[in-house]
Amino acid sequence: MKFLFVGLIAFFIAQCSKLSQELLTLAGPLTTSSTPSAPSLSNEEVISGLKEALQIGIKNAVEKSAILDGFLGNPQIRLPFPPDALQVKEKALQLGMTSQVEKFETTLNRAAEEAVKEALPIFSDAIRNMSIQDGFGILKGGNGAATTYLKNQTSTQLYTAFLPRVKEATSKVNLTAYWTPIINKYNTAMTLSGGQKINPDLDDYITQRSIEGLFILIAKEEDKIRLNPADRVTELLAKVFGSI
Image (cartoon, rainbow, N blue to C red):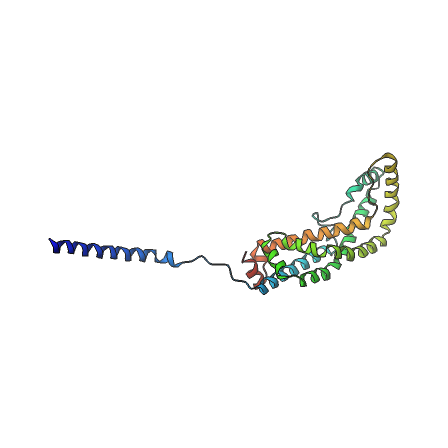
């Protein structure tokens, strides 16, 4: 009986060992596989990749906006008749001045197309001065983070650089000479009636809207690189943006 009991124990242990080995064999491929991890990045690679992305984005944005009809032909950034002066536009249309209104709006956009040609050197300086902390903030900041960084770093310089180009463009067609008396007369009437006055500074309006339009295009370029692997046109871009 003793030998029979020992034999049964030995048989049971052997079967358990065999079953364990079979389970390990089946489980082997699952336990040894691992989820691919994102490529490790050095600080230098992050900064270089982001600078490269920004250079591509701003170059594309400036090239698209600084050409003939770059603003006028793009509904997303086209400068309309100044919103504060829509009453003036409506009155002009009522007086049969449709062609003058159209010419006025065209000239607004031609001035913007000229102004944005000044942008590249300003953006390049901001990109060169990017810190490691800035870079990781942009990388992890999601859509629009790089555009926000550029806005914070360059808006004042862009205004200073754009304004003379805008003034030059509007003076060629005597735009402000026609605009200012109309608006001043309108504002005088508003003073008497208690209505809301309009900012007569047309050059300021064009400059501000030019900058806004350019950043709209830069944001689109940034989002393309973040969201679409096909737009990561270099190995470094693919590595950096593939890590997030």
